[in-house]
Amino acid sequence: MVEVPDGLVEAQVRYNGDAGREFIAALPGRAARFLEQWGLRRTGPVMHGVTALVLPVERADGSGAVLKLVSVDEESVGEPVALRAWAGEGCVRLLQHDVDTGTLLLERLDEGRDLAALARADARQAVVVVGELLARLTAVPAPAGLRGLGEMAAGMLEQVPRALGQLVEARDRRLLAECAAAVAEVAGEPGDRLLHWDLHYGNVLAGGREPWLAIDPKPLAGDPGFELLPAIMGNFRAEGVRWRFDLLTEAVGLDRERARAWTLGRVLQNCLWDVEDGEERLDEEQLAVVEVLHPRSRLR
Image (cartoon, rainbow, N blue to C red; front, side, top):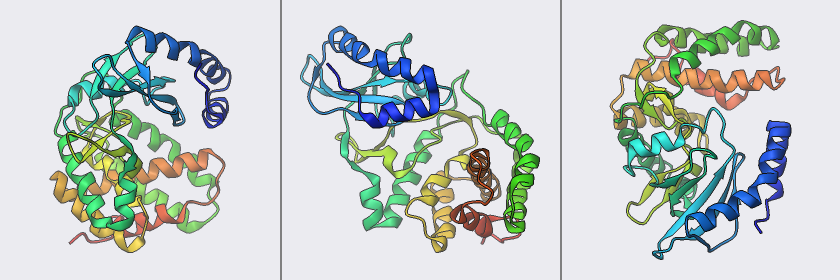
């Protein structure tokens, strides 16, 4: 029997309520089913995030893999589509997929070595790694049917007036409005590249066939500029915002003004989520990014 970690139970109940409880209750049976159906043998302790239980396994041919049992939502539903499109170029390989349950069998990477450790030792090299991965991943056109950045941006802009009314500080309102203005300028051309959308340091693992590979995409069709903020925010230092932005835009080959606008769009998204959660003041690190990259700041 697979024991479901308390952290996954708590996350599913908190965010998904009864649907989360149903997902948790079905996990042991689902794990047993796919271990048998796909000829897998467990080789290590369970791992988990907010939406998935992950089991290290060995395939019949002796190769390592991980069985990912997912609570499919609008963010994760496109994961197998994206992984097939990337075909292991810069990301983990998809080995098998069950359409009905969303269960994935993935290439085994080194879960004990993510990019966060490198970032603590050499921040610049970690950003270089992310930039190189993003250049490869966003070179691929988005397959049909994925969530689109255009629709997402329009939804964000609709939420801005209410959010402005909830914020108590004039500075917060001004900077949120500047983010919204930047997004409004580019929202009509949202882009058509395949985006990972969540490429923070914890979602880059050491691999055997390549030094670093991306995992856990939350795919979008859109402009690569919307991808930069996680690498700008990792191990955050306000004085690092500009050089990180410069390095990433150069690595991915982006138009700097469009990249700035979409990076501010990503800040806008984060801030709107905070306001939706009841916050009346915005996160200082997010605001620091805006103050470096806002439209009045000259990018040299």
